[in-house]
Image (cartoon, rainbow, N blue to C red; front, side):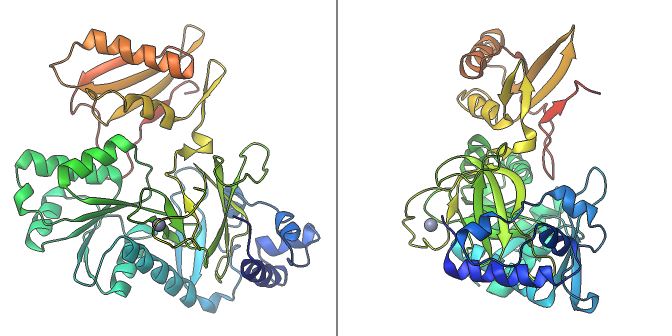
Amino acid sequence: MQISDAQLQQVNTQVQRLISSDNFYGRRLREAGITGVSSVEDFLALPFSEKQDLRDAYPLGLSAVTESEIVRIHSSSGTTGTPVIIPYTQKDVEDWAIQFARCYEYAGVTPEDRVQITPGYGLWTAGIGFQAGCERLGAMAIPMGPGNTEKQLQFMIDMKATVLTATASYALLLAEEIERRGIKDQIHLRKLITGSERSGEKIRQRIIDSLGVEYYDIYGLTEVYGPGIGINCAHGHGMHVWSDYVYLEIIDPVTGEVLPDGEPGEIVLTTLVKEGAPLIRFRTHDLSRIIPGDCPCGHNEHPRIDTITGRSDDMMKIHGVNVFPAQIEEILGTFPELSSEYQIRLSHLDGRDTMRIYVETNGSVDWEDLRGRVARRVKHRIGFTPLVKIVELGVLPRSEKKTKRVFDERYD
Ligand code: ZN
C-alpha cells in the first residue's frame, strides 16, 4: 500500500523534528543529506534502521524530546547484549492505550467484559499495554501477570473472566489444565487474545477446540509502542495495522527492495506521530505479507498483514537449503496423530549437519511407521531427510512465556 499524502506529511514532521534533534536518527538523517520528505521518492530514500542501532543508542539516545517530557521507559527483552530503551511521552502512553482499546473493539470486547491479563508487567510492554487498553475501553482488567496456574484458574472461575489475554503457549497450557481438571463448565471465557508469539494453526485450533473461544492475534513490538498496533478482525486471521499511527512496508530481507502487496517479506515500520522515540523505516525482522484486496469488515484504511510466519533471523541453513521453523511446523500440522508441540535440534555430527525433530503422539499409533512418514514428507517438501524422534504426549516442555522450539547446537 503506497504511502498516502497525509502519511507523507506526518513522516516529514517526524523527520524535521529528528533532524533538529541531536539523537541517533537526527545524526543519521543529517549524514544522509536528508532535509525533508515531500514525495514517495523522498520517503524511499530514508535509510532503514535496525535493532542494533537502537542498542547503540543505549540508554536514552533514541529520545527526541527533553528528559522532562519522558514519563516512562520500556525495554525490549535483550536476552543478548545491551537492552534497547524506549522512552515514552504522555502522548505516546495515551496513543498506545487508544490503539490497544481499538484492538479490543475489533475483537468485539465490550465494557461488560472481564479481561484476565497474564502477560508480564514491568520493563516489558506486554501486561501494562493490555491493561491500559482494557481500562480505556471500560472493561474490567484482572491484572494477574504470568504464572501461578492454580491462582489463574481460581480467578478465571471466581471472577468469571470472559476474555483471556496470554501468549499462545500459556493459553495452551491453561487449556490443557482446564481439560485435565474437568472444569470447563465453570469457565466463562468467550475470547482469547494472544500476542508476542507466533502460533501455528495447529496450536490455535487446539486452543479453540478446547476452550471454545474466538481467537484473536495482536501485533506489535516494544520498539513501536508495544503490542497493540494491530489485530485481526472477525473476518479471518489478517491483522489490521493502524495506519494513523504506523506506516507499514514489506521488503525483501536480502536486497531491501520494497515488495508489492501480497509478496512475503520482512515487515518494516515507520511511526507517524510518536514523540519520545520515533522510528523511521525500522526493520522488525518479522516475516509476513500484506493481504491484498478489501476486508469484509470494511476497515480498508488499515492494511492487513498475514499471520507472522517467522523471523528473518530464524532462518536455518541446512545442507544448503534455507528452512524456516514455520515450514516444519506446517508439515507437522498435516499429521493429525501428532500434538501441536515439537522441537527442532540442529547439530553437527560426523562432519555433517543434522536436523532432529522431536514430536509427540500417544501410544495408539505405530511409532516406527509414523517416524518414517514424517521424515519422508519433510524430505519431499523441503529437500532433506531429518531424524525424527517420537516421544509420549506431554513430554515436550510447555512454557508460561514463549516456548523455545528451535535449538541450534552446531556451534556450541
Ligand atoms: Zn477486517
